[in-house]
Image (cartoon, rainbow, N blue to C red):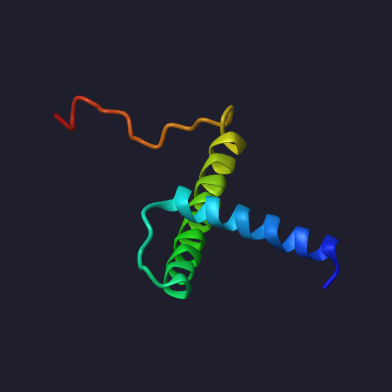
Length: 80
């Protein structure tokens, strides 16, 4: 590996380490287990992010719908 590739790998390792710490406490003393748990937490986070993005997109899409139809029937004196 060249010095440049080693620098990128080191930077990637530092970024992953910071991301894993941001997700929560370290799950294990073993590096492999802790990385696996951090990966699972990352996937859960991404699924929450995607779900929220779809919810927000739906709200924005229907924000100013003008076609408001009343589907409740009118109450008449006979109904009372």
